[in-house]
Image (tube, rainbow, N blue to C red; front, top):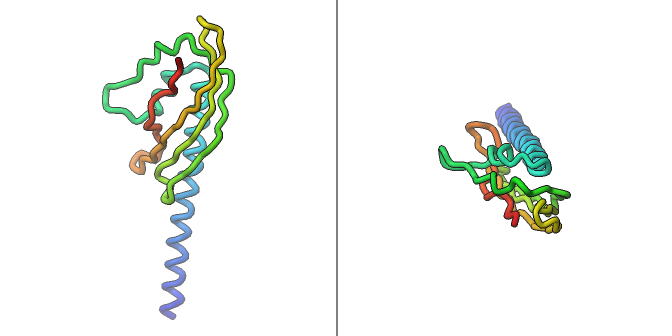
Length: 130
């Protein structure tokens, strides 16, 4: 009888971990979509609000005022084994309204899960638009 109970407890615990990892993946995908929308539509303050930063600091988003994104394509996503960190590679095509020249950059994003807040934060800087 005891081995059956221990097996049941082990299966239950592994099921709970699987559900937790599934929720992390869903919330990561949601955060990635939210960040993508903010960058694509030029809402750089909204994108910056998803960044993990020291209290009271924010990125200088005013410098992006003339940047217009024409394409945002995720080309790679790798999650850590425990699904608490992720690296996302994105190719962004954009132009500066003043130069009217389209450029392409690859943005290497690092994301971390905060278990206390149950949300994901991007820890890398804003895209390096020129």
